[in-house]
Image 1 (tube, rainbow, N blue to C red):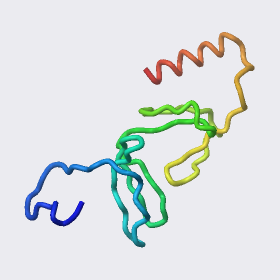
Image 2 (cartoon, one colour):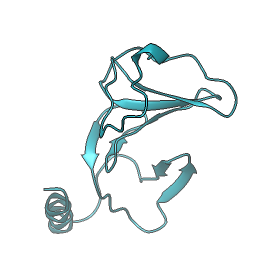
Image 3 (cartoon, one colour):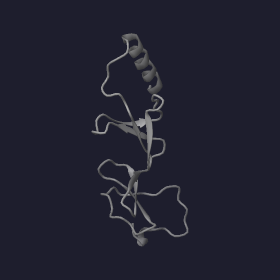
Length: 119
């Protein structure tokens, strides 16, 4: 947006952004806000190059290898002692690896509880 596109002394309840690629890092102490053409999400980029998605109330949950990748999550419940706050809005959940263990009844009860939490 250039200064010629700005309306002076008028308060608008919205602004319009054109989607684009991630911008270069701004000067120290500044941030750039943009809509990413790749995923259509509103993001900000700081002078260190850190990009943050700006979407209130959304949580993205994905495995370290990137799949599965679930968005729109509002609550995640994990076993006590398995959650690590990595900082910067990111956490890691330590699990015992791929499934298995437990009785079929216990596993079914856990699945029903998880389903009811996310529906």
